[in-house]
Amino acid sequence: MIEQLTLWFQQYQSVFAWGGLFSAITFVLSLLILPWLLSRIPVDYFRHHQPESSWAMLLTPRNMLRNILGLPVLLAGISMLILPGQGLITILLGLAIMKFPGKFALERWVVNRRGVLPAVNWLRKKAGASALNL
Image (cartoon, rainbow, N blue to C red; front, side, top):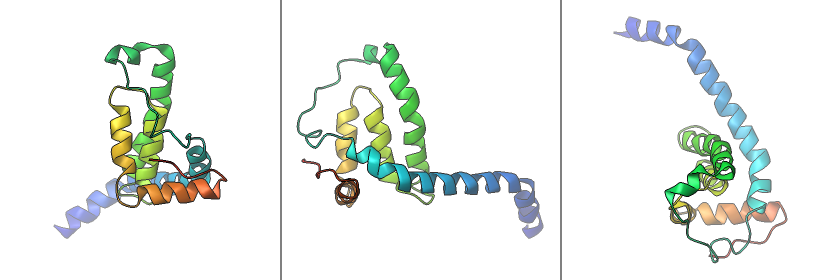
């Protein structure tokens, strides 16, 4: 059994190496980019929101581009839940970039998780922005 496990790890050694490299890169990038991105969120974002209209809005070129750009950020945040990095904050940023029905409710749920809002506001303060108002 141990021999099979050792053989399996040897076969997939490059996958583990690339996964570790991806983890290290996303961790460093999140530390460098997140404060700036979070400072771009309007202070009253969670107070004044317009409900998303319909699923047809996904087909506009602008929203398609936003979703294509936001999806990798969202996936990186999900991976950071088990890898080093600021997972919930990165998920929040990925959601902020994207545009789809129900997005606001999902963002509000993420920001209301324990410790997320204080971390977001701490990073915003480091970037010179005011705290978010819920």
